Length: 510
Ligand code: ADP
Ligand code: MG
Ligand code: MG
Image 1 (cartoon, rainbow, N blue to C red):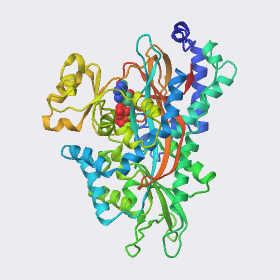
Image 2: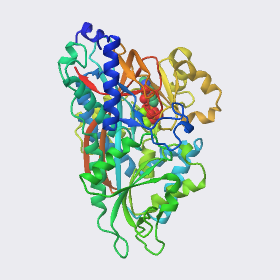
Image 3: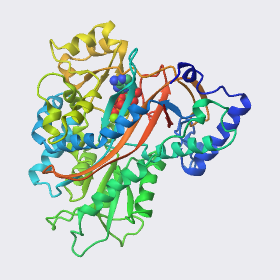
Image 4: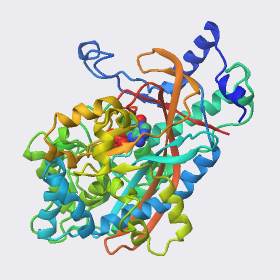
């Protein structure tokens, strides 16, 4: 793309034009469910005691330019990534050998592993696992070269914003098709964001698991359902409802929502039935019962959600049941940042080739190309030097084994942060080279409190995939489809929409 075109994007807005776009976006968002519940910071509890209000999700007013080649490469690799993470999850020995080092220093990982071991000892009764994944990338810019696709991270649990990302795409497409929504600009004339089938893909994965579960294992037979396990006070509820609406409306599968702190009250596993079906007892209809085919976790990915041993008991209760878990404990652990660092190691065993048995080596090489350099922090290792030297630390991010945003340490803060921690704990963290996304683009964000921000931005692309497999390694269903663009101010280190750093966006491919 011509530099000049890029630099003038998006076009300047007069106060009247901005007002028009903001009003159109706010109204479209509520009309179409591109919405979130407001945070207490925006709306104190006493201003909405019955919790009836919603506001627009944070969105950009314009779609952002994104290199077509990177976008297409991310889609092309997704089913291979799905296969990779299914294979890792099936290899308990390999996974365990890496998790072993984390267990000493990370209670959360240790408790997840313990949960797996307890169920393993009793014997798993479900050999199917379901993954709903999101692989996140940035378009990495190096001088005099076309941008290349680099992975930020791979998510194996609670991969969110599938529902809302499809809506942002529709919002921008509709604005583009409406005369005078935007001031004229060549880029805005040249196209529309590509289709976004995330809702179909993710609900399609859940439907496959539901079908593969087979008939009721209860006596007498019970009707079957899918269960969404959600956080108490979840603000991103409309994103989740986009998936359950599709499951009930299109796939004709009943879906119920259970808060993680009510799992043990609202579900049971009958002791007399060795098949261990998970039974859901709807509190709003005490005489009814459903058998759960698939447990979809939109909770329990972060240690602060396990407030007592009761939460760990609930997690184990789900894990030992016959329901297909999305994800299983092992699949959640496969998503640890540490695993991503080990996969990216340039020397040593070729893990990718072992896990991707039968995949064309040329495809494996392309997948490897998406890795940014990552290091452990072992004594005498390169990672330690890079992290402790203030100059090289500036080019890196330090990551713990956590999800959901807000957990990383960046650049200049890395050396002191590490030095303040006992050296024996360093192995719980990985050091990753910062990806360098194009930062000359601008956009305008409408935050969920109505604030409008304009400035230089960087964007992160997420690509969704779903895979269903047997623990023997046999893959039953492997699909990709749908994407997410999150855009944040250039100077912001962290990402994440729910964490308050980014806005939902869509792409104009160039
Ligand atoms: P989480 O699982 O908490 O989302 P991430 O690895 O995605 O953790 O890191 C959070 C955010 O930090 C990302 O959304 C991105 O904005 C930023 N980030 C992480 N790794 C990198 C990297 N290598 N280069 C640039 N930014 C990064
Ligand atoms: Mg993550
Ligand atoms: Mg992330």
